[in-house]
Image (cartoon, rainbow, N blue to C red):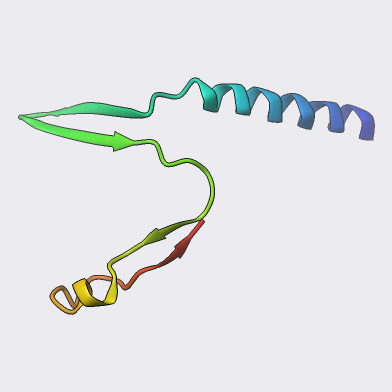
Length: 69
């Protein structure tokens, strides 16, 4: 049973990495009534999210910058 599980995990990882390589870098979805949703692929890993402190002072209800993963 353990060998089968390892093989399934290896196959799942291989399929997911191939699928990720085939994903579009950006995409647009028409939501109707003139509204479009623009999406951008963000690669896996850590990135900064939020506003830098100097910009945040003008927008106090927004969150400050931090690392997201």
